[in-house]
Amino acid sequence: MVQAIYGKKIGSTQIYDENGNVLCVTAIEAEPCKVMQIKNVESDGYNALKVGFGAVKEKRLSKPKKGEFTKAKIESAKYMREIRLDDFNSQYKVGDSIDVSIFNVGDIVKITGISRGKGFAGVIKKYHFHRGPVTHGSHSIRRTGSVGMCSTPKKVMKGKKMPGRMGGIKVTAPGTKIVDILSEQNLILIKGSVPGAKGTLVYVRKA
Image 1 (cartoon, rainbow, N blue to C red):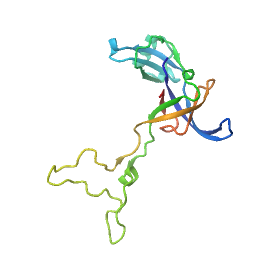
Image 2: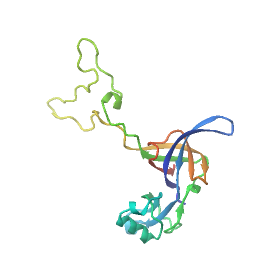
Image 3: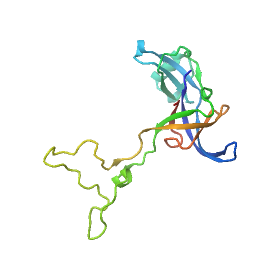
Image 4: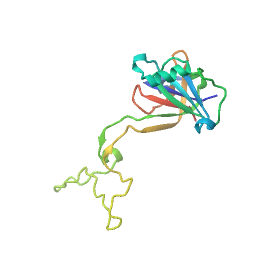
């Protein structure tokens, strides 16, 4: 059975466990994902299930996307993604659904999402550099400092920590625990935080 699903981060809240302790959890809405295509090593070079999920108005879709859903004979969806498989799985057919029932309370999962974008940032905010001297007319309080090299190799090496865009990258949170599953609402409650802002897509898979 496939043990991965796509969902949308709803937000954070608090619940009580059986001992009366408060737990901070993140709610993920994982609507059923419809299988659109089954990929395998022979035809595509890798094993995967192509799935569609999320409600959408027909006028919002381009003709090529409409054609893919028509070919699969399933309802149109807002998103199309792939769930990679280690081995070919013949258990699923085109039109089948993958929902939150694939997980159990207590499962340890990995969650991948796009972290919050924080715009352009300097090295102090981005990499926690120490600031320079403040007194005696210093002009390098929050500056990066020297980045040059000696006569050899006469260039700035790749990977140098410099000011630039912060956040907005793919992040995976390993080893997070499923606290509760609300099947009727298609909700998964994850202990702790989850990468990304509210409303962003996340990929949940069993660790």
